[in-house]
Amino acid sequence: MKIANSLKTLRNRHKACKIVRRKRRLYVINKQNPRFKARQG
Image (cartoon, one colour):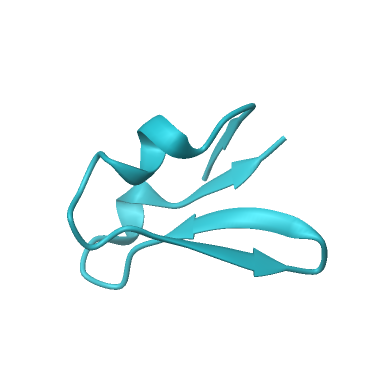
């Protein structure tokens, strides 16, 4: 999992990426390719 200050560019890495808010944190998840997971740090 990548930790980044901004998730905007990480969301654009793959067309299946989605931004989800869980436990007051922002995550990028990708069901097709879990390699693209990210969290806002």
